[in-house]
Length: 41
Image 1 (cartoon, rainbow, N blue to C red):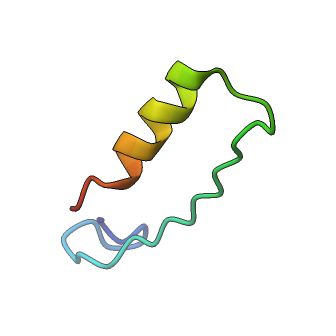
Image 2 (tube, rainbow, N blue to C red):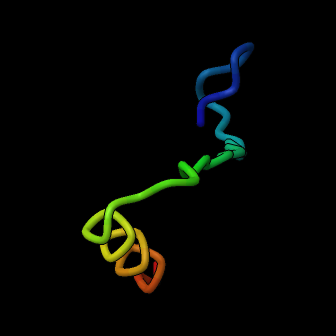
């Protein structure tokens, strides 16, 4: 990520995500969330 004061300088960009899953899901929705949780980056 470019530095604001000096665009030639690069730095780190930190992102914080907060996922909220509904309490009540259909069977298909639950299967898709479980499948997504097995994905490794």
